Amino acid sequence: MTTTFESGPGRLFIGGQWREAADGARTDVIDPSTGRVVTTVAEAGAADVDAAVRAAREAFDRGPWAAMSGRERGRVLHRVSELIRENADELAALESLDVGKPLSLCRPVDVLTAADEYEYCAALAQTLDGATRDTPLNAFAYTRRGPLGVVAAITPFNFPLILSSSKLAPALAAGNAVVHKPADETPLSALYMARLLQEAGVPDGVVNVVTGSGPVAGEALLRNPGIDKVAFTGSTAVGRHAASVAGEALKPVTMELGGNAAHVVFADADLEKVIGAIIKGFVFNTGQFCMGGPRLLVAREVYSTVVGILADAVPGVPVGDPRLPETVVGPMAGEKHLRKVEEYVDLARKEGGRIVCGGERLDLNGGYYYRPTVIADLSNDSRVVQEEIFGPVLTVQPFDSEDEAVELANSTPYGLASGIQTTDLTRAHRVADRLQAGIVWINDWAMLDPAVPFGGVKDSGFGREYGPEALAAYTKVKSVVVSLD
Image (cartoon, rainbow, N blue to C red; front, side, top):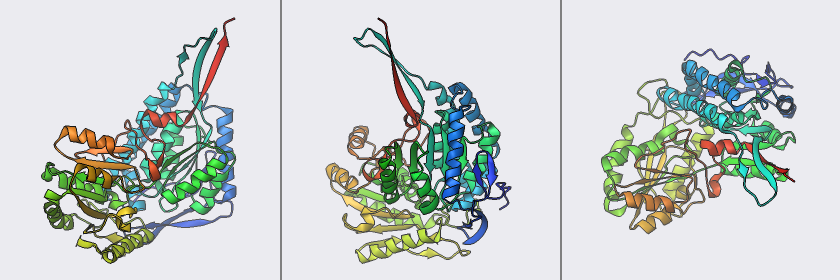
């Protein structure tokens, strides 16, 4: 794969300039399909993070971006969307190289979703207005919405381009400045996007990118007093820490955390359509998807049938080199993620689970591949059922009633997504209302659009991304009351 990656290469982007880390430190970027080093990027320390926050603060305070009208900011963000589409092949190649995603999916899913998000937020930027309020006071009362200031955007390894866009686009639409720390494993598209944002006309200092580790760069960013809001996507454990640090300084936060979604199949479901949705729900992005569907709950009348179909169908899902057009499932994003999946499958065996298919590594070119795996016969209190595996592993459990299905679906600490398969429209709405999740899909999986908000409840976090709800989260409301005496 050939790219024209041009960030110095891999330098920090601070105040509109590319620079090395203050101490010259660099870190390797690994191609997960081969396990080989493909490049290095700067590894930011606390001094670099402080410089980025100061650049963002200066850019925000001097006001060329925040002072623009929403319509003017919208024009710039629309140009960002256009540039993403114009550079789609390059961005897709970087995302595939960095994460191990099948190249055939990177362009239509990751790249065009990011373009859609900037386009949506470009239009949304013009909707930032206040309201007049009727009161018994002899006064004219109204509200104004304005940006929060400097936002720390901390994003994970699994969807680098999409999940950075879901934070940067609404933050910029509202007039904020941003310091973005991408995952240390997958920094390439974030650096490339810094160049496109600058080319589109985002003023210097409004967007800054610091690559580096979570314990060093991430922690420094969380604790920097110049940050006004934290937007975080990642694991629940790290999210708890991030929210705690932000809470000490009374900073608002948006937390999109782990998930362990239930996919509920009722006996009346159309099984020909259901199987495709089930497989997509747990193998998409090699199962590294917070809103994936790794827990399958099936009505007992069709339980054996569904398990049998999966036993035949799942081994036929193409796993392999992400550059090949036929590949559906690529490698895990790194060795540690692969080991985690292996540990959970070994635990499933100890907990009495039956490996229906898969259950082992795939030895291919030195990459981090794992065969899609289906596990039956686990109890609901099994760790493998209750915890987030974050890999291509599906557990299957039977249920005997609608109430039991809802109880099982809601039985984990998570609540990010869920799904229902049924031809009974009344049941679909009834069960959707009872499921504890931020988004519920009916008769398909992973139907996402920038206009539809998503986010979690319980241990899956709080706040929403996408939709006008996301824009509101990057603003503050000021009330103005004018005496008429």
